[in-house]
Image (cartoon, rainbow, N blue to C red):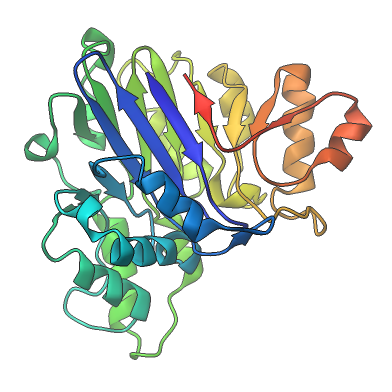
Length: 314
């Protein structure tokens, strides 16, 4: 069983992924933003979800933008006990130099945790009897369908060591008050694939889909595999989603999650152009889990395309 809860606020991501079998369960937390969503304090909502669980088994911080990391920092301050044994998947940017306050604060908080980056070749030491973590290189050679019913496979697709170094060098070249290259940070946010019980979920951070597609195309026995859910990159911006519609069609994926401002006034997140492409390709089969109010668009096409964003079951 897999359940996905989306509790992000506005232009911010936060997901809880529950994975369970008859014997055990794991909880993966992905990102977190502190903010207000439709009058609801999203930080309090995150705390409410945290209280459901005895602990967080894996914490994935895709990148250091405010809308992905600030809620994690605040949550860890208030619920430290939930993260004592958490394995953190995160790409350091300030190891030897302090030049960005949020990254600095977060990296101090995880000093006592096991922390792994997305550029390793092997993650055996960080896997357990339910969740097996795979590198991109290993997934290129390993057919997960052989044991897919026994384990959940979490493949860290992106970025590789070169991408991690690019972000780190950007920070080394800046003063304490310097700002990160947001384009570079987004491009190298962590993307991962979750495969369990013949279900496949793709989480993309704020990355560039055309870059992820290249890596996905090299995975063993994946080119004809159905994808059950894609988290649309960067709140549905056109620039970050080149090729996503045709790729989704190829893999029979008709279900998506996208975050964005609740009031869809500027029509930028998700972009109207991208939304039209999805509707043209999938029609009534399309499901978009979102808090963004796109009812105006649904009135035009005469059938619902959006669903409640707080729970997706598989």
